[in-house]
Image 1 (cartoon, helix red, strand yellow):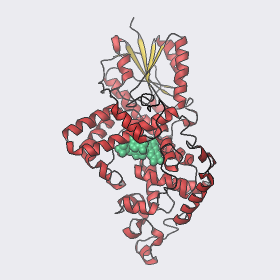
Image 2 (cartoon, protein in one colour):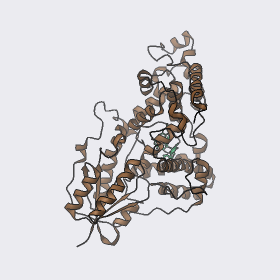
Image 3 (cartoon, rainbow, N blue to C red):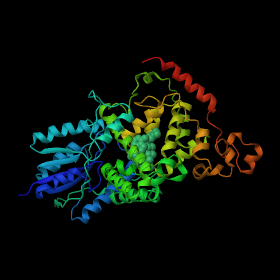
Image 4 (cartoon, protein in one colour):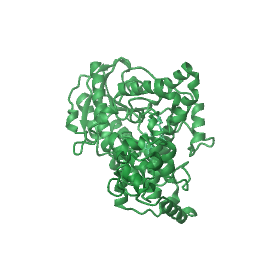
Length: 478
Ligand code: FAD
């Protein structure tokens, strides 16, 4: 009888360039494709609302792709260890293959599975494919982990990279006992804040490939010079596809190399884009070696930072009601689309931690729930980067000025006008600081500050000084 191998899909929702699938389908073995919705094992890191919406659509797409090939993706809800144990028993599977994950809870689970399944003579194997380089393959000369991005990335660039692999010929298992995906109710209902997201996103492998193709055809040549301008929409918007594994970084890399050959003039822009993929690698590398990063300040002195938790301040930030237009535009873009431009993420994060003195973890939590690309590694590392407490972080005293950031990166006001329409009629001169507009200018634009749009939640200069004073408390300690 032919052996059955369970291919346990996790954050690798694709068929192309999937080393675990290559291995599982070798020697004509039957492959049983399985996804387990496990709300137990991640503990506090159970998937947020926006990610669940994405997951629903991505799993639907994967199920269709597998069906087109004659197979059936099996859905099960429950604790992964228990579900895998059950299915191994009922199918006589001899092996479970999956792609490696790097979140501390997931690595722990993999260790336990190794033991559980090993005890039942079931072969449990984990494969790469989620990163360009496995953590541990990129180390300093003295054998330690890199803590600074530039030398890390330089070292990565010197390593060989395997080429992506196509979908293999697969003999799919005939096992069919599955939950119905709709019963998991992954899409939000009250409120259905994802109502219009299908206008912005096409989750699934085809959507990911199309997005990469369009980005390389239409925008990459402008990437280096224009990526910081949110109204330009020049960045790739690949992050949710990469996060859910609908596309591998090796595929992105290979397409970029090909594009460099076709259009040598775009080489600089493409390298810049590849370095951003490098930041994703670096975040995973940090998470692997410093697993507390999403929860605890990397720089120890920040443990004593005098945060001032304040529910009202946090809620006004979450709702895009701070009175600082560039911050409010970003927070509303996030709610409306499940994403936010990178430059604006830095501005709103700095505003929360420094102007409002709220703990970076409260912003990290909000992003975790509302971003379609919510990622334990990139989110945790980026929040710590902005807060000043992370590895290779921005210096604490680099406090983004929400007025000049707006004036510089949204000079013509297109971004703010899109997301904060109530102030759209203000002239550019006042768009990023409505409180400086004269009574007449406000009247002409049809705005009453304090009722149509909020007065600023804090005074910029005073808040900046308060943030610097707070830092004085911990500066010397370590
Ligand atoms: P592009 O500019 O096209 O970059 C290409 C890819 O590189 C991205 O898709 C992403 O995978 C990776 N990348 C780019 N910048 C970074 C970065 N700074 N760190 C890690 N990877 C990067 N990114 C996430 O994927 N998930 C998160 O949860 C997340 N949270 C963030 C929180 C804060 C406070 C900040 C400042 C940044 C965060 N980022 C996060 C990083 C970055 O903002 C997004 O990856 C980027 O905006 C996604 O848009 P894009 O795909 O158009 O990026």
